[in-house]
Image (cartoon, rainbow, N blue to C red):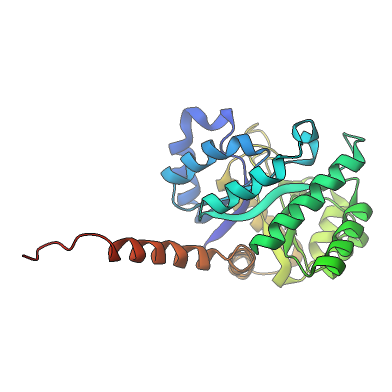
Length: 282
């Protein structure tokens, strides 16, 4: 069985002492690919170093809605430049809206719109963080799609109601569930998880946060635990685990164009070989 963890933050300090062991654990658990999300562009160099060490790691780049103190007129250009600079970038984000912890709504909406624009121009999906802002986020995306055209993306670490879930399904978005769905009192999340069509479902850890049951006593979440999220979802949705793993993996590969990313790497390698000196020829 293979799985893809579609949202990790393994660049955080808590992973620094034992990242090789963490990688061994995710490989042993059948996690074949990870999408490393970005909180702010200054993280990107460290994320690249991680992807250099672990080839199954792909990257995103963006600015989190709770980091609007870092938003400047130049930040959008910086995000686009970084996205263009590395073939391993498969998404823009995480971006979105968070009105639970912040009230700078206008700045968040401007940043969100700018990052949607970058994603559209680069033909990349967006990774969206949305908390207490589902109506506003859906309206903004709907307006963007009406003016600029369709854009793909995922509502990451989703905790919305079934009604809110439907808003984003209607916009063509994927819905990703984290360890929250395993929590005892997460009733609306469980209802949403049953509602999402199989071809729009993704799984993630959002590590080092939100450790799923039965690993709740471990304060640090890790990518290997996405297997527990998948197992819980399979039981909740009354689907075979192997089926859910196969579908969520296929969904992640489709959304993030992971096979295309690998093909691009091969193409780049072939292109480089064309200009290298031939060996063994006199």
